[in-house]
Image (cartoon, rainbow, N blue to C red; front, side, top):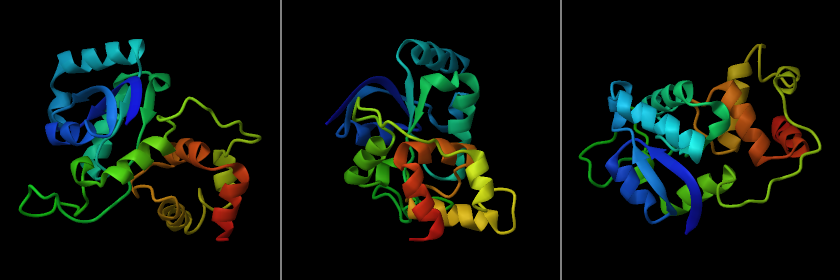
Length: 193
């Protein structure tokens, strides 16, 4: 089991129940879009973020990214660790049909995938990777992933190679890729090796 003093933020109660078998932490739900109107919960998250830090784990669909971005607009960036689950298509066992985008939410993702997502975000370890060189927006531009013809398609290929959700913004992708791979590994991915 993973242990963290940070507060884990998920969308709903079934997500929280799923995570109880993965991580030993305080888990807070946003009640989906309820977070938009719940000023008290917003204030609570801000307080918890400043005292202990937040780990945000939402579904990889558009609703999940909207909630993630909303929380990110309320809480200082340095207080947040984003954990991303990959796009996995299917439906949760308790539901009659898949969600609008056909992707599994946190509650439906296998436990080993959740553990890997936390690991990739550096949550399960205190060891930080020493990097010789960070990957930047300029690297993305020079490698055709930003500001050029077919740059979106190239970013999607990179997202799929890293098993990351396709809705991730370029800024988020750059942050996450610096956690996941070294500069040399990034260059190999971009070259398709």
